[in-house]
Structures are given as structure tokens and as C-alpha cells.
Length: 286
Length: 348
Image 1 (tube, rainbow over the protein chains, first blue to last red):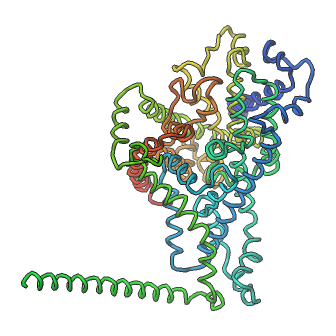
Image 2: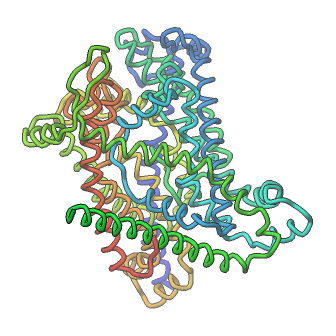
């Protein structure tokens, strides 16, 4: 009995230490965001002159309204950026996940000449790390005339990537008897896909769409290279800082930054488990 | 006369050869089709009707997209790498010439210790080493602790994953101001009598600061990845280890590690094969008014990105990309072979 309690105490001490270490790490990740929030409520001069860790004198929530007009890149304010982010995100996600669904279903559920070839091309192209095809991409996109236009979304109709592999393994695990039942009831191939099989794959499709939407929302490289005329929120934040090096209104910048993160945070708060589980399989890019 | 006959004979042979070649090909195709047809006979009958048009319609978009945006793009990379801009013709069209000048320039610059290319390679290796020597081992240990169910571990999981979800544009901007001179970190450290140097604006500390940021925010995603794998380890095995009096060391390295090896090895393989693409959010870290990638923070991936963003001659960055892709292909093959040899049961 004595030994037991002793051991218990020892464990709880190490556990306590671990708990504190974890808390420290968690605080170090959260506090910068909290600090940015408090700073976003200050006045510009107050932020520059006073101690940066003080609480704001007046809690200026109006900064958030000002941010919508103040964060301005060549006459494009935050409303425009928000709109660009929305179509870029929704369009990219729909294109990528939709095409992957179609390809994965056909390859997983039918045997046709070339289906194996498609599968292995997808696997091998995922294995080879291409170092910087951006110069070539730029030339080809320019030649195709999809640069600086919403037509860029055509480049995201990609059915060979990570989405394809996840959905392929999922469709493969669905029994074929569902399809047979549908065919006996007189469904065509497309009806069977659309009405019977697709609804069953709802959960991986949802999860992949969430992750892909977050990636598109956060992507600043692609809009910076190919959509300079259509700044999204993520690329806009960077461009704003580059353009206004001298007269940077920091509280308003912070307000804009936090507003940018809000939609993602809402999604994450509701679907954190889904997002984590699917990311475990593929990994989100930072 | 003799010559004529010879010419005729050789031509005849050629024709015959061609004829046999096409015949053979048709024969091969027919065999292949037969084989496929026999195999597809085990599919139920209604499945076979109108199947081919449906299948090809379903994969058409993806295949066309792949051909244009993968095959053509990467093929064009190679073409660009072997081209040199020589000037304009009378109609102001750009003129190019086949040459290896891009590669010559690259090797020449690699030999200079202070050129952006050699700094980029050095920094890329630094990012790579930080990932494989610090982030992966550290997050593996920490995930073990998280796995042992620390109080409030669900909340920790949620928070640790946060930097992977929030845009780097958001997180870096906040972080950059957080560590700036007179920023909060400076204020906190000054309580202990320590003065924070301008980390991002000096070449000695700039790259290490960005690497520290990538480690600090990158711990979380690996951690959750490993912890998820550990939770799938059967409880009986852990109990058996405990009953046998095994220490935490035994539990971690002799029970858990072999079972989560598929996950662990996948992250290691991805890290090694991505050697030349390892980089950080360098663009976002550039201080206002300075050149991005200045202060010796260049990496290979960022060099190519920046050259593309600036426009102008894209042949040189394309050549660098092609060179490092070619170098990394044998590495990929070798690494996968080695890992297969370590544990043949694992499928990648």
C-alpha cells in the first residue's frame, strides 16, 4: 500500500511538470493572437508610443469597421478582397474535390483500359517532389491566358492529387452490391454515381472540402503570382504591408488580420475533429 | 544498277519491318483488349452496358488537366532550362537559342560563397536539418506525453493544431510584431534584464529566427499525427509491458515505436524526399522596406518563387528547379528502398 502511494505521487509530479510545459507551449501559441486582438483596439499613436503590452485606453471596436475601408490596395478595399477570397476558395475547392470525386469513382469502381495507368500515374506523381515549376507555370498560364482572371480556377481541376487517393480508397471500400441494386432498378451509370454512391461518400468529401477550403483561403503564394489584380485576404495583408511601409496603421492592420482568420476559426471550432483526422492522412501545408 | 537493286532491297526490308511492327502492335493491342474483356466479364451484365463512354467521360477533365498542368508544365520546365535569351528580332519577338548557359551560370554561382544560390542551398539544408533533427524527434517525444493523457489533452490538441489552420499570413504578421524591438517579447525579457536584438534585420539571426518559428509552430501537426497513431496501439500490449515492469523507455521504444512505425517512417520519408523544397514563410517575414530574402534568408524554393514574382528571365530559375528535381529523384528511390528494407511490411 505504501509503495503504491509513493509511486502514485512520483507520477503525479512528472505529470504536473508536463502539464506546465504544455500550458506554456499553448500560451505561447495563443498569447500572440490575444495580444494582436488587444492591439487592434488601440489608437495608432497609442500603439506606437506606449508600452505595447498595456491594455488599450479605450476599446475602439470601431477599428474593425475602419479596417474594411482602411486596408486599401490601389483602390481595392477589404470588401473586394473578401469577395475575391470567397470565389477563389469556393471555386478552387469545388473544382479540386469535384473532379477528384469523378475520377476516383470511375477508377475505383470500374475496370476499363487505362484505369490502372491513371491510378499509378497519380501515385508516382505524388512521390516525385518537383522543385519549383513556377517559372514554367507562369509561362504556360500566360500563354493560356488564364493569368489575372478567374479562369485561373481551371488549373485547379486536378483529379490526380491527394484528394483522388483518399477518395479512391474510400470508393474502393464501398461494396459493389449497392451499384447492382441501383442497376436492377434501372438506373444509368451516372444516376448510380450521383444518387447512390456519392451520398455515401459524404463524410470524406466534407472533410476533404474543409481542408481544401482552408488551404485555398490561406494561400498567399498563388494569388501573389497569378492574381495580382484580384488580391485575396491572405495575399492582401502582405501586399498592404509592402505598399504602406511608412504609414502603417498597426491597429487597423491587426484588425484586418484577425478578421481574415475569423472564417477559418469558425470552421475549425465546429469541425476540428474532422479537419484533424483528414490532415493526419495527408498533412496541411503551412 | 547494282546500287539500285540494293536500294530497292533495303527499302523492301524497311517496309517489311514496318509492316511487321504495325501488325505486331495491332496483335498486342488485340490480345490486351481480349484479356481486359475476359476480366471484365466477371462484372455483372448491367454494369457493362455503356460503361466505357461513362468511364472516359468521368476521367476526361482530370486527364486533360493533368496533361496540361503537370506534363506540359514540367516538360516546359526542362525546355526552358536549356534555352538562352539572345535578343529580339525586327518584330520585337523574343529570340531564344538552345544552350546550357543556365547550368553553367548555376555551377559558377554555386562556387561563390556569397551568391544568393549558394546561400539558398545552405539555408535549405538548414531548414531540412531543423525539421529532421529537431521537429520530428521533439514532436515524437511530446506526442508520447500527450498520449499518456495529460489533463485537458483535448484542449491542448485543439490549440497545438491552431498554427496549421490559421493562415501563415496572419500568424507570421502577428509573430513578427511580437518579437520586434519594443514588442511584447522584448518587454517580457527586459524584466529579466535581457535586451532583445533586432532578430530579423541582421543576417546572423534572421534565418535562425524563421527556423525557430517553423519549429515552434510545426511541432503541433506532427504531434497530433503521432498521437493519433499511438492511440491505435492495442491497450493489452501496453498493459503487458506494464505488468512485466517495463519502464517508459521500454514502452515507448519497444512497444509503441514498432507499431506506429508506418506513420513515423512516412513523415521521415516525406522530410527527406522534400529536402530541396524545405523552406519557411520567408516572404512574409521580410521586414517593411527591405528586400524579401535579404539578410541572407534565401532558400532554393523561395529563390525560384521570387524570380517568378519579379518576372523577367525565367529560364535561369527553371534550370535550377530542373537540376534539383533531377538530383532528388535518385534520393527518393533510394530512401524508399532503404525504408522498405528496414520494414518490408510497411506500404507507402
